[in-house]
Image 1 (cartoon, rainbow, N blue to C red):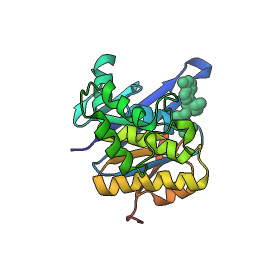
Image 2: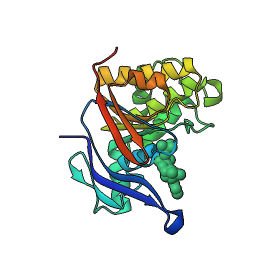
Image 3: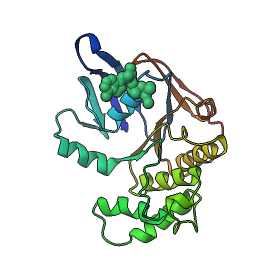
Image 4: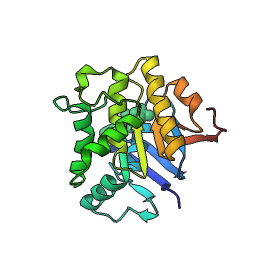
Length: 230
Ligand code: ADP
Ligand code: MG
Protein backbone atom coordinates (compact mmCIF):
# COMPACT_ATOMS: atom_id res chain seq x y z
CA UNK A 1 0.00 0.00 0.00
CA UNK A 2 1.25 3.48 -0.77
CA UNK A 3 2.05 5.88 2.06
CA UNK A 4 0.22 8.72 0.46
CA UNK A 5 -1.59 9.30 -2.80
CA UNK A 6 -2.76 12.59 -4.25
CA UNK A 7 -4.99 12.56 -7.30
CA UNK A 8 -5.70 15.71 -9.26
CA UNK A 9 -5.22 17.95 -6.26
CA UNK A 10 -5.91 21.65 -6.75
CA UNK A 11 -5.35 24.40 -4.19
CA UNK A 12 -6.21 27.98 -4.97
CA UNK A 13 -5.59 30.91 -2.64
CA UNK A 14 -7.66 34.07 -2.72
CA UNK A 15 -10.22 35.03 -5.33
CA UNK A 16 -10.85 37.43 -8.20
CA UNK A 17 -7.82 39.40 -9.35
CA UNK A 18 -5.79 38.14 -6.35
CA UNK A 19 -6.40 34.48 -7.13
CA UNK A 20 -3.32 32.22 -7.05
CA UNK A 21 -3.53 28.67 -8.33
CA UNK A 22 -0.81 27.24 -6.09
CA UNK A 23 -1.45 23.62 -7.12
CA UNK A 24 -3.00 22.66 -10.43
CA UNK A 25 -4.17 19.05 -10.78
CA UNK A 26 -1.24 17.51 -8.99
CA UNK A 27 -1.08 13.71 -8.78
CA UNK A 28 1.67 12.10 -6.74
CA UNK A 29 2.10 8.74 -5.02
CA UNK A 30 4.66 8.19 -2.27
CA UNK A 31 5.68 4.57 -1.72
CA UNK A 32 7.08 3.10 1.50
CA UNK A 33 10.80 3.70 1.95
CA UNK A 34 11.09 6.46 -0.64
CA UNK A 35 13.39 9.46 -0.18
CA UNK A 36 11.80 12.18 -2.26
CA UNK A 37 12.79 15.78 -2.72
CA UNK A 38 10.42 18.39 -4.13
CA UNK A 39 12.30 21.05 -6.00
CA UNK A 40 11.42 24.02 -8.14
CA UNK A 41 11.73 27.79 -7.93
CA UNK A 42 10.36 29.84 -5.08
CA UNK A 43 6.60 30.13 -5.44
CA UNK A 44 6.27 26.91 -7.47
CA UNK A 45 4.05 25.26 -4.83
CA UNK A 46 6.45 23.10 -2.78
CA UNK A 47 5.20 24.24 0.62
CA UNK A 48 1.58 24.09 -0.49
CA UNK A 49 2.10 20.51 -1.67
CA UNK A 50 3.88 19.46 1.54
CA UNK A 51 1.06 20.99 3.56
CA UNK A 52 -1.39 18.78 1.67
CA UNK A 53 0.70 15.65 2.19
CA UNK A 54 1.09 16.56 5.89
CA UNK A 55 -2.66 17.15 6.36
CA UNK A 56 -2.03 20.73 7.43
CA UNK A 57 -4.27 21.97 4.64
CA UNK A 58 -7.01 20.40 2.51
CA UNK A 59 -7.42 20.38 -1.27
CA UNK A 60 -10.07 22.42 -3.04
CA UNK A 61 -10.38 19.66 -5.61
CA UNK A 62 -9.04 16.16 -5.97
CA UNK A 63 -8.45 13.43 -3.43
CA UNK A 64 -5.78 12.54 -0.94
CA UNK A 65 -5.30 9.28 0.89
CA UNK A 66 -2.81 8.49 3.64
CA UNK A 67 -1.98 4.90 4.46
CA UNK A 68 -4.85 3.76 2.27
CA UNK A 69 -7.42 5.98 3.99
CA UNK A 70 -9.17 8.72 2.03
CA UNK A 71 -8.92 11.83 4.17
CA UNK A 72 -11.35 14.03 2.24
CA UNK A 73 -14.34 13.50 4.53
CA UNK A 74 -12.52 13.83 7.84
CA UNK A 75 -13.21 16.60 10.35
CA UNK A 76 -10.33 18.78 11.46
CA UNK A 77 -10.14 16.83 14.73
CA UNK A 78 -9.92 13.54 12.85
CA UNK A 79 -7.32 15.01 10.51
CA UNK A 80 -5.15 16.09 13.41
CA UNK A 81 -5.43 12.61 14.91
CA UNK A 82 -4.19 11.00 11.68
CA UNK A 83 -1.47 13.66 11.47
CA UNK A 84 -0.36 13.06 15.06
CA UNK A 85 -0.21 9.30 14.63
CA UNK A 86 1.28 8.99 11.17
CA UNK A 87 3.30 12.06 10.23
CA UNK A 88 6.46 13.63 11.63
CA UNK A 89 7.43 17.20 10.75
CA UNK A 90 10.77 18.94 10.41
CA UNK A 91 10.74 22.71 9.87
CA UNK A 92 13.16 25.10 8.23
CA UNK A 93 13.66 26.99 11.50
CA UNK A 94 13.90 23.87 13.72
CA UNK A 95 11.06 25.04 16.04
CA UNK A 96 12.60 23.57 19.19
CA UNK A 97 11.39 24.78 22.57
CA UNK A 98 14.26 26.91 23.88
CA UNK A 99 13.75 26.29 27.61
CA UNK A 100 13.76 22.51 27.21
CA UNK A 101 16.88 20.41 26.73
CA UNK A 102 17.35 18.34 23.58
CA UNK A 103 16.12 15.16 25.23
CA UNK A 104 13.13 16.98 26.76
CA UNK A 105 12.17 18.38 23.35
CA UNK A 106 12.10 14.84 21.97
CA UNK A 107 10.27 13.42 25.01
CA UNK A 108 7.62 16.11 24.72
CA UNK A 109 6.55 14.72 21.35
CA UNK A 110 5.81 11.38 23.02
CA UNK A 111 4.04 13.00 25.96
CA UNK A 112 1.83 15.03 23.61
CA UNK A 113 0.94 11.78 21.86
CA UNK A 114 -0.25 10.40 25.21
CA UNK A 115 2.63 8.08 25.93
CA UNK A 116 3.12 7.40 29.65
CA UNK A 117 6.39 5.82 30.64
CA UNK A 118 9.63 5.10 28.85
CA UNK A 119 9.85 8.49 27.17
CA UNK A 120 13.38 9.24 28.39
CA UNK A 121 14.79 5.94 27.16
CA UNK A 122 13.04 6.25 23.79
CA UNK A 123 14.18 9.87 23.37
CA UNK A 124 17.78 9.03 24.18
CA UNK A 125 17.77 6.11 21.74
CA UNK A 126 16.56 8.29 18.89
CA UNK A 127 19.05 11.07 19.74
CA UNK A 128 21.74 8.44 19.39
CA UNK A 129 20.34 7.43 15.99
CA UNK A 130 20.74 11.01 14.75
CA UNK A 131 24.31 11.20 16.04
CA UNK A 132 23.67 13.25 19.19
CA UNK A 133 24.48 10.70 21.89
CA UNK A 134 25.66 12.53 25.01
CA UNK A 135 24.24 15.93 23.95
CA UNK A 136 20.70 15.40 25.26
CA UNK A 137 21.23 17.64 28.29
CA UNK A 138 22.00 20.71 26.18
CA UNK A 139 19.47 23.42 25.43
CA UNK A 140 18.99 24.44 21.77
CA UNK A 141 21.18 27.56 22.18
CA UNK A 142 24.05 25.30 23.27
CA UNK A 143 23.92 23.36 19.99
CA UNK A 144 24.98 24.23 16.43
CA UNK A 145 22.28 24.76 13.81
CA UNK A 146 22.93 21.32 12.36
CA UNK A 147 22.71 19.73 15.80
CA UNK A 148 19.45 21.59 16.49
CA UNK A 149 18.00 20.33 13.24
CA UNK A 150 19.04 16.79 14.16
CA UNK A 151 17.17 17.19 17.47
CA UNK A 152 14.18 18.21 15.36
CA UNK A 153 14.66 15.08 13.22
CA UNK A 154 14.78 12.99 16.41
CA UNK A 155 11.59 14.65 17.60
CA UNK A 156 9.90 13.86 14.28
CA UNK A 157 11.05 10.24 14.40
CA UNK A 158 10.46 9.30 18.00
CA UNK A 159 6.81 8.41 17.40
CA UNK A 160 7.88 6.14 14.54
CA UNK A 161 5.76 7.94 11.98
CA UNK A 162 4.75 6.44 8.68
CA UNK A 163 6.09 9.50 6.88
CA UNK A 164 8.44 12.36 7.73
CA UNK A 165 7.89 15.71 6.00
CA UNK A 166 10.48 18.45 5.94
CA UNK A 167 10.05 21.87 4.32
CA UNK A 168 13.49 23.21 3.33
CA UNK A 169 15.24 21.44 6.25
CA UNK A 170 18.70 22.68 5.26
CA UNK A 171 17.82 26.22 4.19
CA UNK A 172 18.92 27.85 7.46
CA UNK A 173 22.18 25.89 7.67
CA UNK A 174 25.66 26.40 6.28
CA UNK A 175 26.80 23.74 3.83
CA UNK A 176 28.63 21.63 6.40
CA UNK A 177 25.65 21.49 8.77
CA UNK A 178 23.29 21.03 5.82
CA UNK A 179 25.26 18.00 4.71
CA UNK A 180 25.21 16.53 8.23
CA UNK A 181 21.43 16.91 8.36
CA UNK A 182 20.96 15.43 4.90
CA UNK A 183 23.23 12.47 5.58
CA UNK A 184 21.38 11.81 8.86
CA UNK A 185 18.09 11.71 6.97
CA UNK A 186 19.61 9.41 4.35
CA UNK A 187 20.99 7.04 6.94
CA UNK A 188 17.64 6.82 8.74
CA UNK A 189 16.01 6.11 5.39
CA UNK A 190 18.51 3.39 4.58
CA UNK A 191 18.75 1.74 7.98
CA UNK A 192 15.17 2.00 9.22
CA UNK A 193 13.27 2.45 5.96
CA UNK A 194 11.82 5.78 7.13
CA UNK A 195 9.95 7.46 4.28
CA UNK A 196 10.90 11.09 3.73
CA UNK A 197 9.36 13.79 1.56
CA UNK A 198 11.05 17.14 1.71
CA UNK A 199 11.55 20.30 -0.26
CA UNK A 200 14.78 21.99 -1.17
CA UNK A 201 16.31 24.24 -3.73
CA UNK A 202 19.81 23.30 -2.65
CA UNK A 203 21.58 21.54 -5.54
CA UNK A 204 23.63 19.39 -3.14
CA UNK A 205 20.46 18.06 -1.53
CA UNK A 206 18.77 17.45 -4.86
CA UNK A 207 21.82 15.58 -6.13
CA UNK A 208 21.52 13.07 -3.29
CA UNK A 209 17.83 12.26 -3.47
CA UNK A 210 16.67 9.04 -5.07
CA UNK A 211 13.47 10.61 -6.33
CA UNK A 212 13.29 14.18 -7.55
CA UNK A 213 9.90 15.75 -8.21
CA UNK A 214 10.12 19.15 -9.90
CA UNK A 215 7.34 21.70 -9.63
CA UNK A 216 6.77 24.75 -11.75
CA UNK A 217 3.83 27.14 -11.39
CA UNK A 218 1.86 24.66 -9.30
CA UNK A 219 2.31 21.64 -11.56
CA UNK A 220 4.67 18.68 -11.53
CA UNK A 221 6.91 19.01 -14.58
CA UNK A 222 9.15 16.02 -13.92
CA UNK A 223 9.36 13.05 -11.59
CA UNK A 224 12.67 11.25 -11.79
CA UNK A 225 13.82 8.14 -9.91
CA UNK A 226 17.51 7.44 -9.69
CA UNK A 227 19.74 4.71 -8.37
CA UNK A 228 20.98 5.21 -4.81
CA UNK A 229 24.09 7.36 -4.68
CA UNK A 230 25.33 6.32 -1.27
P1 ADP B 1 7.18 27.42 -2.63
O1 ADP B 1 7.16 26.70 -1.33
O2 ADP B 1 7.58 26.55 -3.79
O3 ADP B 1 8.02 28.65 -2.58
P2 ADP B 1 4.43 28.04 -2.02
O4 ADP B 1 3.69 26.76 -1.94
O5 ADP B 1 4.78 28.69 -0.73
O6 ADP B 1 5.70 27.88 -2.96
O7 ADP B 1 3.55 29.09 -2.83
C1 ADP B 1 2.94 28.78 -4.07
C2 ADP B 1 2.13 30.01 -4.53
O8 ADP B 1 1.03 30.21 -3.64
C3 ADP B 1 2.94 31.30 -4.53
O9 ADP B 1 2.51 32.08 -5.61
C4 ADP B 1 2.55 31.94 -3.21
O10 ADP B 1 2.67 33.33 -3.27
C5 ADP B 1 1.11 31.51 -3.05
N1 ADP B 1 0.71 31.35 -1.64
C6 ADP B 1 1.26 30.49 -0.74
N2 ADP B 1 0.65 30.57 0.45
C7 ADP B 1 -0.33 31.51 0.31
C8 ADP B 1 -1.35 32.04 1.18
N3 ADP B 1 -1.49 31.60 2.43
N4 ADP B 1 -2.17 32.97 0.67
C9 ADP B 1 -2.06 33.40 -0.61
N5 ADP B 1 -1.13 32.93 -1.49
C10 ADP B 1 -0.29 32.00 -1.04
MG1 MG C 1 8.21 26.99 0.44
